[in-house]
Image (cartoon, rainbow, N blue to C red; front, side, top):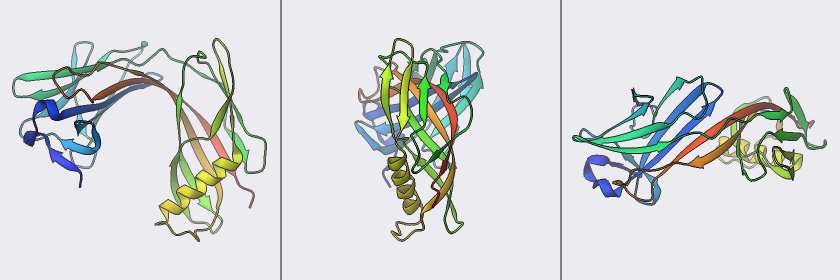
Length: 244
């Protein structure tokens, strides 16, 4: 559902949905196509249309990362420097349509310095990022959780953290444990086919990914609703104990 083949669409109706992310020395390319402003409609390369990427004069073949469904394409490589400029190329016939982006400068997690545990009724964990006050980072919380009955599920949600302070080169956030508990139990219910009587979450082993994202330049020959971003990502471990 919500999929169309690129060969059935005009070039000007195809939108780029690409992301270039760097974490340490690893650069990851994620490429996807959609139709015009409708990001929910996935456009699958077909009829000779294809996706590749270029970096530092090298051509990188983007591989299907959606189990053969042609919905998402990607690749990764090692880069020792900062802010690599990467181009994602949509090929149609002899023509190449280029969208480019570069991750912003690296930043670090100043605190916590190692794995930290958040309890449901405890004080919110403090996270300090080495980012300018003008930056608005995004975060993603992923990991594995256990319910009180011993069953397990994979969790993915946003870390509920509010900004305490922002200085010239650092931002301080505090986790809201009550909202975190609600979010994890919502994901638990969703992972259990929406059963509202799903047992409560007992504990989780989680990774928080913080990302500073910037917009790149999409191909002027493709649909103007396209988007390509460059992101630098940092991670830290967060364990959760509900103490039920």
